[in-house]
Length: 506
Image (cartoon, rainbow, N blue to C red; front, side, top):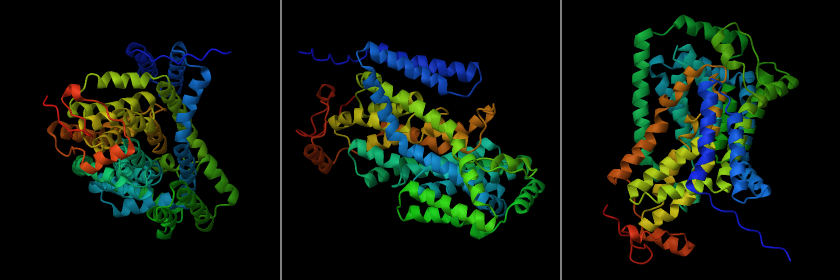
């Protein structure tokens, strides 16, 4: 007769913080002391440290391994998007689609309004596609070329692209993260999207005003080099057939997105359309297209701005980013399986009892999970599961929570360089961080819409604005679905299923 297995112990707060603190210290050593922006090994070391903590708590290696690969498995659809976007970039450059976007952008757009227009364009495309990554890798890349022609600093253009692309991802009903947030909090998708408008719209208007002001300020300070724009457009015409019909692959992808077709097949249809366009318009051969899709496009025009933007793309160009994502997700999965993240969150909840404090903590926890685990999905799913019973115990709608984790999860992801979102932005826009161009990390504070939105959300929480209480219908749904409700009576709240919500006075 075999002895029953002893369940693993929960870590103390001190032990739970060990892998987090040591991993952040190792990342700091690599990034700031050695000046080497390759966070892969520090995160792998963090994964190993977390594994040792798990073994000391009584977890078995198969259990830890299952936790690691379970989180990685959840992310595979996004990794698939990365692979297809890599193909798309290489083929759309070869087809002339990206060069045509750059060419007409330089001719049509005014330098003064370029940054504001870039944000709006990326927002519209991202809402249509439902993927910020697809938007950054296609329209965003073309806008980087237009910005270079206007002498706009790279980090300003990248900030505007990120603001627009991730805003669109946040409110698109086709987005995976926008669907994940209400799913883990038990909310309706469209109610979730409507509830995000009070924070999202003001943040976008503020960002739009800043980009407009910055555009006019930069043009007034240095002027625009029309000779430089002419050299870029001339070089593009010399190396590519430029025509409006070459935008057909991009319009096809947007059309499929509007028709609510799945993102991966829609993007791959864009690859096929781009390949056919490259053969018909640019004279590319089939074997050439295979090379562009796998290894990226290569050209030497003699114009530095064009060469730096158009020598990119392909599946292989995404492998640095994909490997970073897989390691970061594995680290996040180990932290979740060992109970370290849950212990840290429970410690926060033990000290926060007001609605404003809980809402702030939910946003902060999503940001911290993004920062430590490097995974936007985990930063939404974990706080969503952990905090939902608290909101119900307070009698507040979990729409507040779904908005909080979307803002701390989706919007902060591209601002953390070793996060899946940040790593993709750096790679797809060619910011050259790994090559030492650290000044381009300035895109982080310049992505105004991403970090202003959660600040507005925190202000609402402390003022009580746009912070809905649970309706009778929502409370009835909690009862019907047997949702978990934390007893908050010790903090001045009545049980919502019995006496109705009674807010704490403190």
